[in-house]
Amino acid sequence: MFGRTLRLFRVFGFEVRVNVSWAFLAILIAISLARGFFPATYAGWPAATYWWMAAAGVIGVFASIVIHELSHSLAARAMGMEMKGITLFLFGGMAEMDQEPASAKGELVMALAGPAISLVLAALLLGLAALGRGPEGAGPAVAVIDYLGWLNLILAVFNLIPAFPMDGGRALRATLWAISKDLRWATRWASRMGALFGLALIVLGVVSALQGAFVAGLWWILIGMFIRAAASGSYQQMEIRRLMTGVRAEDVMHPLTEAVPADMTLAALVDRYVYATQQPAFPVVEDGGLVGVIGLAEIRTVPRADWETTPVRAVMIPADRAEIVAPTTDAMDAVAKLQTHAVDALIVADGHRPVGVLAQSDVLKLLSLKMDLEAR
Image (cartoon, rainbow, N blue to C red):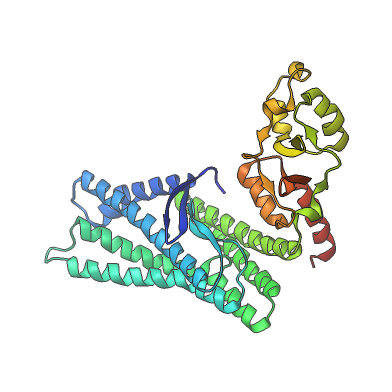
C-alpha cells in the first residue's frame, strides 16, 4: 500500500489496521480544522480551543471511517463472504475481501451497508448538534459534533458515486451483474466508470491548481490517480482469481530430487544445488526428516570466505519457524504467504516430507501464460 501497516485492535472478529500514510491524513485534517474551518466558522474562540476541537475531530473521523468499513465487513459476513479486516490509509479506509462476492445480491448489500450507516450517523450527529445549540449558538463540543455529522453525510454521498471500486461502483457492478449474469463483464464496465471518474478528478485538480487552489488541486489529482489505479487493479485482481482458480501449490512447484543435508557446507550447497537448479530455497533434512529451510537470504548472511566451513544447519531457518505449505494449498494463498513473510520461497511438504519448492516466480510464470492465452 503506502509503507508499513500497524495492527490496532479487533472488533467483532475483524482486525483493524492503520497504514502509516494515515498519519499524514490525520495531520492534514487537524491543521485544516484548527487553522481553517473552525476559526472561519466559529470566530473569536481561543486558539487552544480550536486545536482540541481539531483533535476531537480527527478522532471522530477515524471512528467514522472504521464504523463505515465495519458495516461493510459485517454485511459481507452476513452474506457468507470472508473478509480479511479493515485498513485505514491515506485516502480513507477499506474493508479487505478474501474473495469475490458469491452473488450480485451479496455485493449490493455489502456495498450499500457503508453509505447507509454513514447516513444514519449523519442524521444522529446533526440531530444531536441541533438539540445542543443554545440561544447563543453552538459551543465547541456541539461544533465538533456538527462537523462530524456533515462529514458523515459527505462520506455517504461521495461513496455512492458509481465509480468502481467505491461503494457506488460496487453497487453498479452488482446491478450490471444481476442483469447480465456475467461478473467479468460487469466488473469490466464498472472499472471503466471508475477510471473515467478518476480522470475527471485529475482534470478538476489541474483546473483548481491553475486557478490558485494548489493544495486542493493536488489533493484531487492524487485521489483521482488512486481511484484510476484501484479501478484497474480491481479488474486485474478479478482476472487473476479467475485464471488461477483451482491451481494448487503442487501444480506450480519445483519437485525435489534431493533435499539438502544439514551438515553440508554452504560452499557445497551453492555449487551443487543453487547454481545447478537456480531454486531460491531448499528444504534441509537430517535422519530422513525435515529440520529446516535455507534460502538465498540466509546464505547472504555469511561472508564468502566462510562458506567452506559453515554448515547449512548454522544459518537455516528451523522447521518450526519456516514457511511451509501443503501440496493442496491454493497457489494464490501461497503467493500471499510469500509476500506477507517476505521470504524467497516456500517449502511444499506432505506432512514432514518435503516434496517441492515454490517461488513467487513459479506462480507468475503460469499466470503470465494463462493471461496470454485465456484473458480476452
